[in-house]
Amino acid sequence: MMDGEPAGADGVQGDLHRLVAAATRGLRAAGAGMTVMTAGGVRGVGVASDPVTERLEELQLTLGERPCVEAHNHGFPVLVPELAGRAMTRWPGYAPALHAAGIRAVFAFPLQIGAARLGVLDVFHTDAGNLPPDDLALALTFADFAISTLLDRQQRARPPAGDDGADDGLGDTLGARTTLFQAQGMVMVQLGVPLADALARIRAHAYAEDRDLGDVAADIVARRLTFEAERP
Image (cartoon, rainbow, N blue to C red; front, side):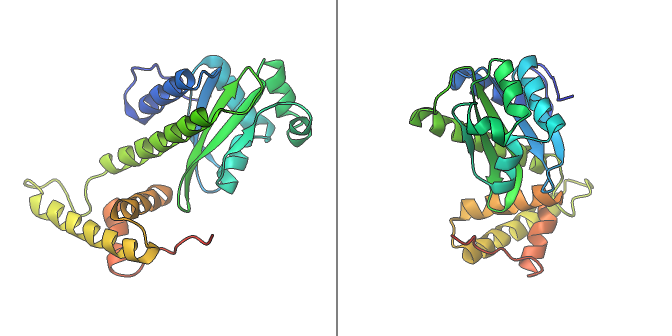
């Protein structure tokens, strides 16, 4: 089952639960759900705005037909404004089940930074129709918030590389920050992106590979790890 923590829960599940609840309200949706996935499509954390949406999210995984995995695998939103016609043949098990539950449209947004794919945000509507431009932009903003939440939690959960907690750790912490800043500069040059985007790419790589941020930075500085710009 997906995580059903209440909105006041702590931890990453609590943060994501609050986010999908806000997305549901902001997008005037029937519900929203989020699944954190590995590069191979294996599900990790899952949250939903309500029990009905939780069952719809679980159904994607049970049937093996899911807009969320298509969005995750291809790295772009899967927008289904009407669960009829082509959608019924595209997902012959899932689409009729959604329709029977009163859902008429579903929109899946990948949680992705560069090549790092973290999961998917799903939004369900009881009325058919495309998302208005403002709602589409808002949904993408919620997806960005989800990415930031996942990466921030992952960074805060781990001490800086080399920090064993002895004394005040000041020297090790400063050293780790210096290495990280140097790594940012190198990735900025490699990708031709702003410094903030370079940090986001480093953090996304650390999250996707389940590695310490400091260790990834050290590999970049030692030139054991390089980043390549995505091809258009």
